[in-house]
Image (cartoon, rainbow, N blue to C red; front, side, top):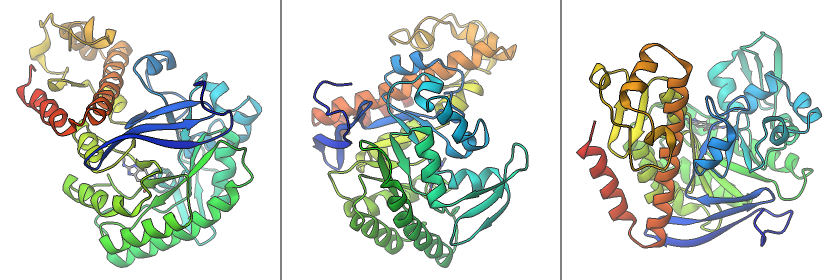
Length: 379
Ligand SMILES: CCNc1nc2cc3[nH]c(NC)nc3cc2c(=O)[nH]1
């Protein structure tokens, strides 16, 4: 807890801007989140392959939990009975939970979507579940999330304009219901509205303005990183950002590669989450200052150099590429653990560098130098 944050408030402070890029911090009862921020994904109450002290040491201020997974296993009521998600997984910083809608649509079977909500069968045991805006907020409250998400409907791209409009308007009605249901929660917690509208600028603007009128404490941009080219994603951010309040955080869901992060920060995004660093770690792909390194590749078999000898992360600095290659070839757990750790650290230091560069008014140079490092390669 930082001394000057009152115990029960949620707020956002902008410290500096550089063009459309912003740096600042979100204050929560469980501490500050420095922005731009990357949130490691802790799907089923674990950032896969890492201890939470490694997550914290890497520089993460907040982690994400997935409502869909946790409601199925171990169950929201059970987590509440065990003291809530912070106690359960021993992470005392802020936690953001999603509302489950996106994963219901991508993971469960036999789904039925209606105005009321979505009914679906668990991919774990086939049991039927009902997810409404009210139930989603109730679950996130039981988990004890500091930042919660409205229930929304995310359409895959490409989709018809009619489909994008239908889902966007449903999501607006669910935004109202989610926000109303959230009012019973303890002070200091926040709920974010989610901007939808597919790749249709007019729908995106209508969604952003309608949510801004509802006065949410923060805003997510949804419906992106769902198969569209990067330029479409960036164009939608440019379309939406001017219609969101500058004094509230903006969270781009499910993004992304290091390049996606830098380009999105340049367009006014403050928060990100993505499975990329940990999922890639399990597939032997390391993100470094020199670009991507695939440690499955035999050319690393006798390379005694670490991934990055100048890093302060042991996974990047202390282990040879030859050793990492060996672990990957033998399909040893430690290979996935070390590369995931390296990637989480790399994403955090990428954001730390962005925060410093924006504060110094040299963000464009930071992006150019970072990309040169990726291109120069040391692979
Ligand atoms: C909070 C749940 N709602 C919700 N989650 C999302 C998660 C995403 N993850 C990705 N790419 C990996 N795009 C997303 C869009 C949404 C979205 O539009 N909505």
